[in-house]
Length: 44
Image (cartoon, rainbow, N blue to C red):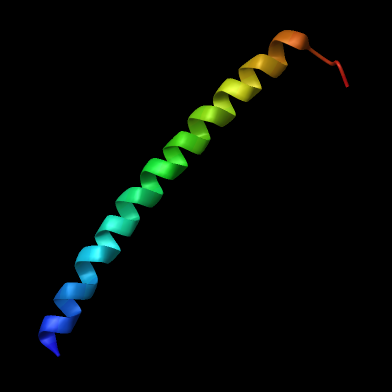
């Protein structure tokens, strides 16, 4: 049973790292999109 808990914790940590990188990419793209919108102003 103890071995199963260890094997589960490793992929869980990998998923956390991947999720962090994905969130960072989304945040970076979001910042680029907002910067482009500020240049146009109130086009809506």
